[in-house]
Length: 372
Image (cartoon, rainbow, N blue to C red; front, top):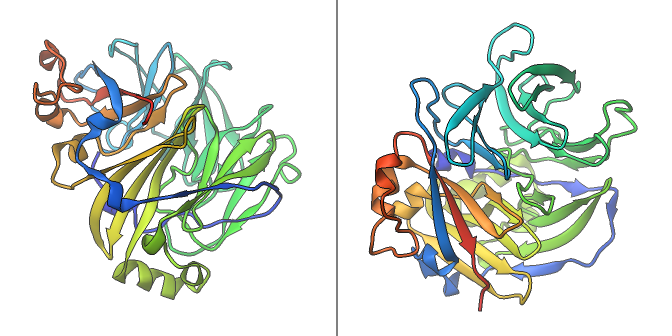
């Protein structure tokens, strides 16, 4: 769960076409009201599931996560480059996917989605723009060539995908497509951009499907076959000026390397809450991490600022999923578990669990409480 510095230099900028008209709410980030290093303010309870460690299932840096009522799915980008499945108690079950050149094998993989209703896991192989389909036991079903690069993707309605083609460079055409494999060109719903993100987390991993447009700081809900502008985020003096955003790539890059600004690195939303993970960049230096939670029921919000030297910052850098039950799910770096699971942190402390923690991360479920 390292490598934050490389993630936050640039994010997506998309000028949206074919977007349903709406009057979006604007949420204003207020850094002056942030509370330092106290995540317990947000959570009513915390539960842990240590993920079993075997001789060949180590999970490396920056894993991806999807948790269903039946299974835990983790995509390891560092070691095996496969999806690992665990039961709800953290016991290792199987691998899904395989690197190689044979049938059902890929050279590289970037991300994945789980469609349990269809009984399958879909892995995005890069740079080929090919999706590999496996059943939930890991048996290869088919490959699906999309003929376009896929940086990130999520399921749409009726067997379609939302595809984002952003890469890892500062310039180059990005596109957001609604992709129907049987009618590729007619299925495209274009959104164009001059910026490329340095990461692929522009789709939310939560019950409310959303696409996060960086630097313009627009949040779109994915509804049927359309984008609906739902919210706008305002960071005040830490917002990148629109004339810089709309300018040429060189000026944009220069601004990012010489000024303080905030970027969104995680957006999650369910029926009750909006979670926004923020990074304050000070030129090329990392200034701090913010957890910003908005309670949709009453409009209240809470900002927690995490200092880079904090054990909570290192162990719980950012959540990977928000569930319908108001649980933020983290994969805690196991090396920081003893420092976080302390009696002095009553919300985070659990007895008789430390012996179950090994090298693999600890699935950490944090129940959000209603904000006052």
